[in-house]
Length: 92
Length: 102
Image (spheres, each protein chain N blue to C red):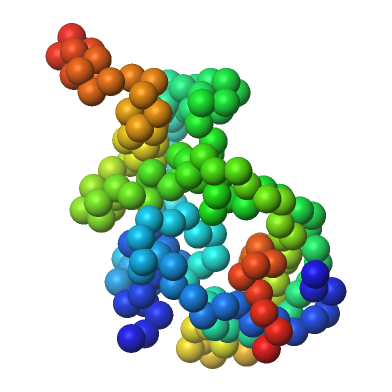
């Protein structure tokens, strides 16, 4: 489990390159560091639900990113808030 | 290889090929077809035949040329059809017969 305020990095993994998958972690935040804002609850893993497999409930978090860490924009204070499942996050 | 080269076709956020295209922000109403597809998805979900995650997964499997051309609900009906065929709820022969009637 991650706590609010904790620094995290989205795993730099690309399972879509190795066969059919359903992933809700956008490509542009993979490998990017952000900050956990809140735990939203535990939800059945959509990566399994999408293939009608038994799906464990996993923690879902709001993670905040500095937008200029993702795209080369000139608005340093802009932020992006994304819902990301815990199994996609690691300690940086 | 940069990230954009590794993204899945449907994972479009911030993809540079769309950055210079104007976004259509005109409001547009639902057609009868749209409503029918939406209702069908609702029934299949309520009866436990297909989850919304399975709907999304099969939408993501649509070949790119079709994915970019089809309307929102046309993507849905393609996905619903693929799911029903995979599950054996309908057969290809039944589908062809119904389409010929239409």
